[in-house]
Length: 319
Ligand code: UDP
Ligand code: MG
Image (cartoon, rainbow, N blue to C red; front, top):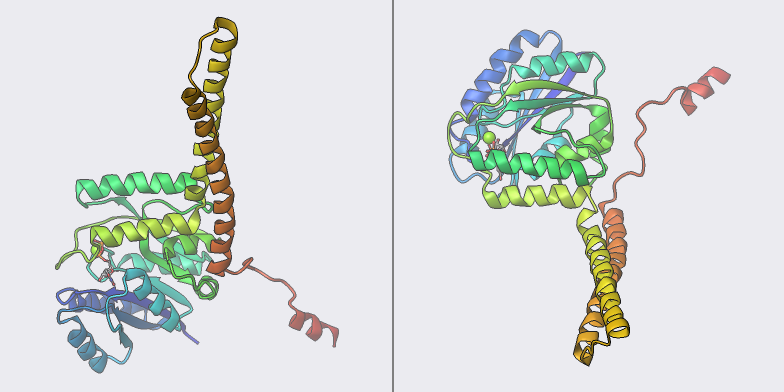
């Protein structure tokens, strides 16, 4: 039995890129067909250009190409999710369709996978994005590294290979806010990196508006960190400590130097301290909301990577 490799490509207004990437993949994969079967899965994420007719025609010509089309634009992460749901492969590769993810890396990914690595990331060693995007990406990844509960690799996008085992875990995570690169890291399976330098897209323009990028960044933060909820605790402690210092100072002044503080100054200090108390209570509230949020994500409680002597094997050994 040959192993099946699924390659998933999300498509949002890529009319000029579909045929080139299809041809590149075909010529790359043809020499491997004695070892593997391939299925290409194109997920049309509500394109408004000629992408869908082009995909339909591809699928009619080539029966190893599977295409699906969303009713509207649901976003890159949802397109990847749909691809993962549909894929039948033993290994699954997700990549952009705009030529920024060089197909030839697939060969390295497959050889790493054959060595037993379950997640193979393609890591960008330099990016040719705009200055602003580079800076925001850098700051964001550093921030996420500090606050997030799982280690999410840096400079890694959605160009990667995952093993069927990883997919089975991933498919149990049905959370709505999907930061898939974080979820893949969360599964905790063995991983390897392949470095590459990222070129500009071959044609068309980016489908990632600032708004979409911001939403993805926010999903990443809220799905993998409780830090925003804990902020209230830090503010609360700061306010209470400074408030108590102020209070001590006016007590000192009154008792030792007989300075006469008007009532409103005492009140302001006391109200300030209680503001801090409120922040602490907000943090408590946040902790409960965080737990609800965690529960609501419904991720599996643990992930089993290996099992030796399963119940079935034990039974067989006994007879
Ligand atoms: N994409 C998508 N839905 C969107 C935006 C983008 O399916 O709402 C696809 C797009 O067709 C491409 C991949 O996701 O294959 C990466 O998007 P893009 O190249 O626009 O992002 P960038 O590389 O600029 O970050
Ligand atoms: Mg791109």
